[in-house]
Image 1 (spheres, rainbow, N blue to C red):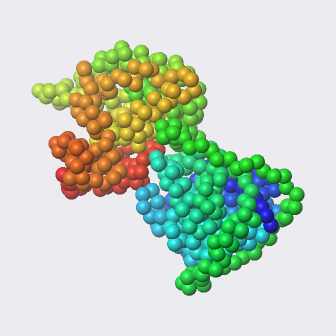
Image 2: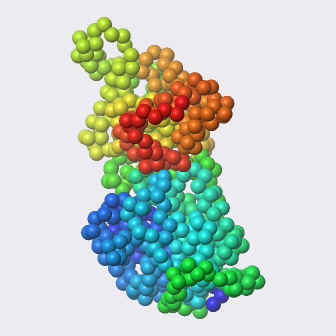
Image 3: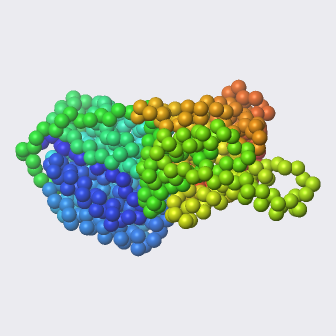
Length: 577
């Protein structure tokens, strides 16, 4: 046996759509069969979608997922299928990989290392596996494990390699965040070279609420070299031939066979021979594709587009509506929406008040023309006047303050929600991470909506991503003036964000240090920050937790996003400054 042909089905599952996911898995099994692949692998929990969260606590959901797995098995012939699902055994649930051949489930691997940090909560649902199976498939010795298992140097990959595995297939649902693809690649290169094995790393793709899975599946050879990589943010079927003869010669030269299993794991190793069809005559495949890595701004943009597209599509909305202010944030959200679901499904509302400049109006309408989206103008001065008349008696003798500013934002929120109700459109909010961090947002106003596209994108990154979008495709869509004009909410005359906040190039590093890096006040000062500025920013972050709890979900792109990642008590008297 000189060549093992492996197909990596990088698919976009939908959480809870068991029948739909099963149908997609069956489709890709047939597609891999046309390539005469020996093995086709699918992502972690591909059958249920990831993460299924408390659906797992429903016994009916578990039994339905098992029934669909049985249907998949019945459609399998002449190829070994590896797919993620939820297994139930002796009143315990497992994050599992089914190994299917000749119409039956031949074996099941249970994930051993269960992540319980950041966005992961697997200890809530699953029990850890105890077995380290090694499968003989088409004459090759294969170890199979799941996601977190590969991150541990002395984990399942090490045990399986010592037990004779030549190839490790690791199935994943690994969410995207900036910098993570490079970290994954480094880990895979380490594991493959440490163990003298080929590592086949398969990742899911698609959006699920706050999470985006970026695909970018990879194969590293036994020397730690990247030999194949799938598409990023797209479904893909990556098929490649592994040169087993070359691998075995290398392992023999390294005396791999003489290495012994630790006694504590030797008893948990099980070697299983799988039935498989032989393919004596197969056309040689082209050299494996190594898809190029995207620049960081493009990577973030594509994550936001995929996350938005799947949130809208998977939740059954017919279109979206966005409040267009003529500013950078709403401009970027509109561009993402148009690219995600088509310009014909995006409507902008321009809602000026007496404080809105002519420049803002020009930029909002130019943006809509550039993107090809529809726009409506709904002035709010008359509505605001009605509110102020009603409140005049109660507010008599008091100066105007943020109350009157927030009324404008809430009027706009009401109008957006009216369009949502009438036409069935999803309201996309336009607040960025910098604003959400310090509470520079109005509850039931600009925070009102169903999905917060750039909730995890700091303001400085908003500008960088917007500049990238303007440089892509040959035509700038965001008006040039929007990119250099000083940010303003335009809720009073001559207002600037800098009236209330430090300049964003000063603010964003403090926010990253405090929120994502968990720096102390003293550590932040060592960055060269002004003590009063740092104290003010940290205080604003801490006091704004109650607002963030009421914000819509938004796409995670940083190492620590608000919501699933960062869960602080609202009632909280601890101060770090």
